[in-house]
Length: 140
Image 1 (cartoon, rainbow, N blue to C red):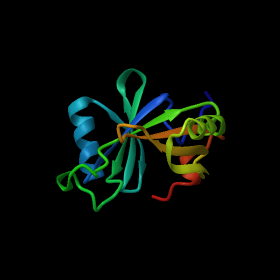
Image 2 (image 1 turned 180 degrees about the horizontal axis):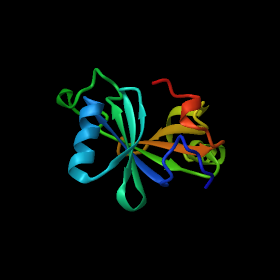
Image 3 (image 1 turned 120 degrees about the vertical axis):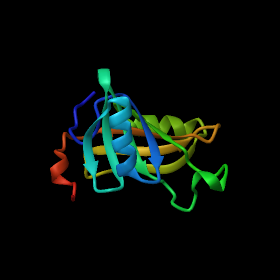
Image 4 (image 1 turned 45 degrees about the vertical axis):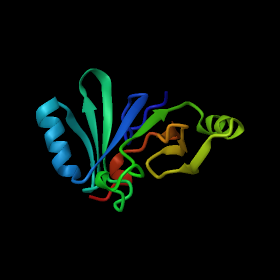
């Protein structure tokens, strides 16, 4: 797997939404011993989990769909790093998967697409295109 300083090195990365990202990061670090790897404004952060794990803390994906609003709420996403997102995407399309976001090349050096599985879970598949220093795209 190619290295990219803008993305955690773990292969599988859970993305958990919280109503207050800063509060969640503080709690997760204090209580679970995680460390903040990268802060992306106030809406997102990457955390290192001891022994090589990683997770992303994100602002609610759809602010109108809070947990108290029922089954439509997106409680999490899973990011999986792959070697070839285009080939992976083509396979998902060929097999009839529900594509929520087609392939997109991002300024942080990743090519990604998003798919929903039969259980309603959202998966982001991400290929590293380049090792991008977060300061090159991140606006504090």
